[in-house]
Amino acid sequence: MFGTLAQFARQVRRPALATVAAAAMVLPALSTASVARGPDGISDVAERVIDAVVNISTSQKVEARNTPMPQLPNDPQLDELFRDFFNRRGQNDPQNRERGPRRVNSLGSGFIIDASGIVVTNNHVIAEADEITVILNDGTRLKADLVGKDQKTDLALLRVKPEKPLKAVKFGDSEKLRLGEWVIAIGNPFSLGGTVTAGIVSARNRDINSGPYDTYIQNDA
Image (tube, rainbow, N blue to C red):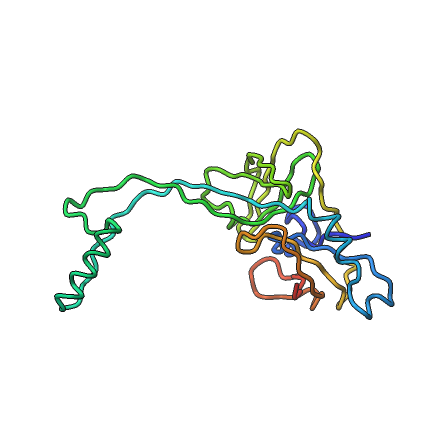
C-alpha cells in the first residue's frame, strides 16, 4: 500500500504539501526489517506509479524585441569580429526593423490524480502558456485545458480527455507520516521523463515563512 505526499491545495488538510507537485512522491510498503536495510520495494512501487507521472509541454507566443548593438571595443580587429558575430544573429539591422513574433516551448512535470483525466502540475510550468499538452509515459499526447491555478502554492490543475481511463496516483494521509520514512520521487528533471529518485522524510510541519501555508513536509528525495 502506498500513497502520494503531493496534495492539491484546496482539497486536502495540508495545502503546503502541494509544493511537491513537480514529482509524484510515494511511500513504499516496507516491513520493519527492510526499512533497516533500505527501500527494497522501490522498483515495484515505481512500476505501479510511473504511468501516472506525465510530462507537461507548453507553448507560448512571444513578441519580438529589437536587441540594440552592444558597445564594441576600440580595436579594429575585434570590432570586425564582433560586428560579424552580431550581424549573423540579426542584431545589427541597419533599418531597425521589428521582427515577427516567435513561439517558445518548455517542459515540466505533473501527475494524474483522477483516471478521468485530471492532472496536477506546478503553476510556474504553465504560466502564460497558450497551449498545454500532457505527454503520457507511453508517448501519447493529449491537449490539456487549464481548470484552475494557485500562485501561493505554485499549483495548477489541468484536464485532458483520454480515450480510456488513465492510471492515477492514490492519496495518502500526511497525518500518519513518520520521520525517516522512505519516499520516492518520479518526475521530469531537465526534460528527462520517467526519472526516479529516493530519499527520506526529513521533517514535518516545517515553517519556511512562505505565507499562509506553513506546514511543509521536508524531504531529500
